Length: 217
Image (cartoon, rainbow, N blue to C red; front, side):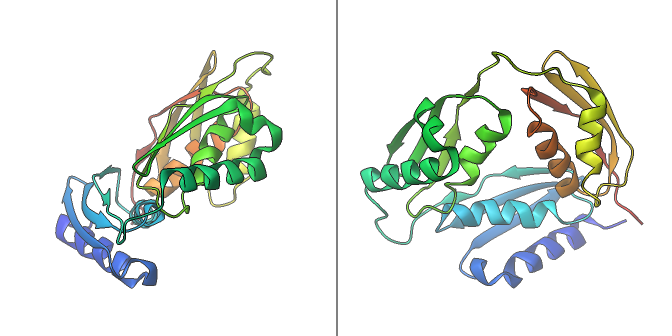
């Protein structure tokens, strides 16, 4: 079993090895396989990238991300950021992007409105993460529950195990539009992957992810 010190060193080295993060000032603290990340990056997508790197490390169960985005220059005017976000939404959502409300204040993006599917809410964040000048994204988009299909356990399990990297036993419990996940997985990244897959299924609004991380020996 890895010690807290060895986990912290592994994470720090993984971050340093990424050429996109050479200027990141990151402090990694670990207690009982929970990671606290502190420090600064100069672009929002680097914050997202660091989260992914850490979640891929075997033995990490939770991430407390306290990283701040401090732009290396004065950044982009809010109206320029807003125009860039709208362009991304037009590309990814077509005309339905008009159902998403948007405000930008000092580089902080707040999203509202409604979309039909849960995966679209996640896509709204993912597709704008690389836009220059963004320092934070607050996704408050709601899911429109009208005319949604029935959620079936077998469909959820089929979607999960379609990804060949998922080999552990995952249990599903469906209550209304909420899905509870239990079982074990070897890493936080796999746990987050399963959650993302389930959220992409039409009709799923909420997930209670109780999957336990048990590192493979």
